Structures are given as C-alpha cells and as structure tokens.
Image (cartoon, rainbow over all chains, first blue to last red; front, side):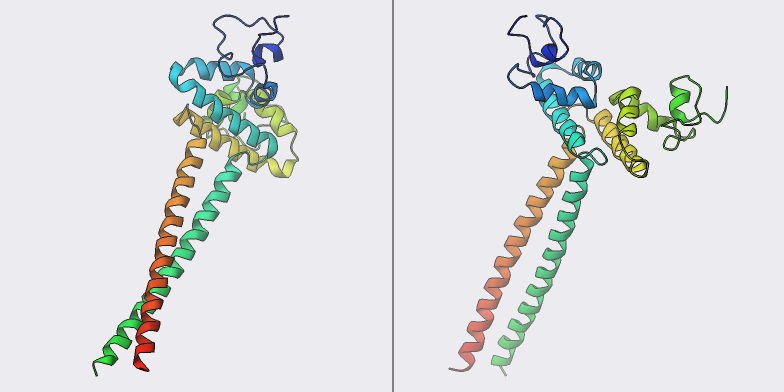
Length: 121
Length: 121
C-alpha cells in the first residue's frame, strides 16, 4: 500500500495514478470528505463532473459538491435546499423589519415637521 | 413498449415495475426531470436515497434533488451553493440597509425630542 494515495483512491481501494483527478482535492488526511461525495454522487459521477471542468475551477467545484453532499447526508429530504428555504425566510423577516422601521422613520419625520411647523405659528 | 412507463424507466429503457421507486415522482410527460437527476446523481444513487426515506417524505426529497441537479447542470462549478452565496449577500445588504435606517430613526427621534424640549424653554 502506498501511504501517499489520495483519500479517494484509498476509499476505492485502488492505486492512485499520477494524473488522478481526485488527488489534488482529496488529501489522505481527510477521508470523510471523499466518503461524503461518494455516498451522494458516486465516484464515477464526481470524476465525470470534474473532468468536464477546466483545472482552475475544480477546487471550487469540489468544495461546493462536498458542501451539498454533507447537507444531503445531514438532511436526506431537503439537502441544502433546506438552507435556501431558511435563508429566504430570513430575508423575508429582515425585509419586513426594514419596512416596519422605514414606516417608523416616516412617522417620526412627520411628527418632527409638524413640531417644527407649529414653532412658526 | 408500454406507454405508461414512468419517465425514469423510459430513460433507462427498462420495464416499469408495479412497485417502481421512481414512478410516483417521475411522470412520463416530464422526461427532463429524470434526465437531470440521472446526469448528476445517477439512477442507482437516486433510487438508493429514495428507498432509505419513508414514503411520505419522498416527493419532497425528489423535488429538492431535482432542484439541486438543475442548479448543478446550470452552474457546474457552484451548483446551488451559488444561490446560497447570493442569498447571503442579499441578507447582508438588507441588514446593512436596516442598520442604516435604524440609525436614521435614532437621529430623527433625537431631533424630535430636542425640538420638543426647546418648546418648554
């Protein structure tokens, strides 16, 4: 066994080739990272998706795939769509609070201008 | 060919069994829906994920998987994590606007109370 095999090749119990598509993104010290994407997408699909991308975008693609896979493991029904719903709820809540505060400011400004006008009477 | 085969079995060129795990969620009139999840997860992984879930949650799981798969097809680098980033930026923007508006209201209220105090002098 080559101790320098990447986490993916170790998981797949195969020799880690020099041009391994997984190796730059799945270091041997983080086996869970590959286990997670493998469980959700399968090694073949991850490899295919990475090979269709230019080298300079692969690291970010791996991170987003790992994030989505982890979300799906944690929440098998909603995955990271659950997070999108939560964030949309948070936006709605903040927008409501903003509208309420803007209404308050309008009331304050009306009161202020009424008080100022009454000074001239 | 049985014209009532679900979209998944049609895509996989197989007979649609009575207890087909895909059939309730992939109607034959929407072939693109299955093509998309198949491309990203593979039929085997989708089937496995659905079989691990209780029946009453499968429809929602299929919808979230289809959403994530479509996002990944549209944006192969970031998938729906791109949407999460966008939403987080929008929350930050709305929170900044809220803080600014709350500061404005504080200024207005200070002016109002100063004006009211000066009326008593």
